[in-house]
Length: 330
Image (cartoon, rainbow, N blue to C red):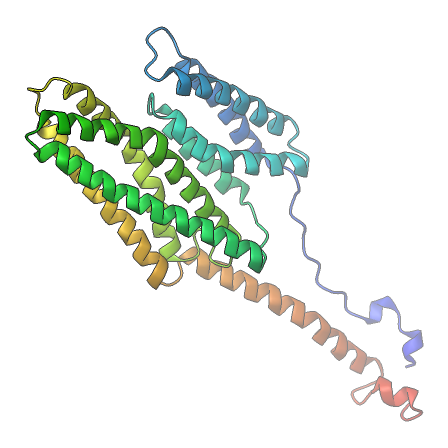
């Protein structure tokens, strides 16, 4: 049979890859509506009244949750477009650390952080790999901020120990007052920026967030410390106010705060160890991802092989198209 007379029916078709839907699924859309309602309720709760604890943060939280309600409602209304999905992914990625800031007056925004993380899990975002130059820049920022976070944690251990152990009333109050200033103006920004840069480095590289145990454990540490820090910051504020009285003692709160600071430092040293030695291998999600990639590569390599086999069957078992054109077998 002449190759020129081959029809499309004689050649096996390449296996088609089913495209994923560009917009939001029904479950993802419902999650957006639920978060919009949650944001409105949170805005009402966090609204700064006459007895506001932190009026500036509460005002920012009120405005932020109203904005969040509008964005997520828009994404839910435009659920059929890829733009809605992209906006939702970017919004929840940015809103998770922002909600940590909103949680200082009260713990309800911590539930919002978990809610945003669950929605991101439902959206299953994919991120492009960083170029070598950009990756080095982000790694540099992440390492610098992480080292700064560790240094601040060690400084807080020293200050909490001085505040608890010293007999000098002025030094005791000064230690707790300095810890309070560190908390508001140094610890929070450094912690948030360290987490954000770590997310960028993980999502923009082969490591991912849940593919390797060492990355997953670092993520748990990075998110666990801020959750406990909500309570820790209240202890610092309480001790700073209590020790205005020279006769006041730190008591059990001072001891608990010192132990908490030691645990924070140990956790950050553990994260440093994980970054350097990378123990634990792959998680089950990482193994599933490898199997999926192998299946895709196998499907791609099988298609040309099938076409070559079909070409040989067209002219019989010994058919050779190149020999045909050279005037050989017909």
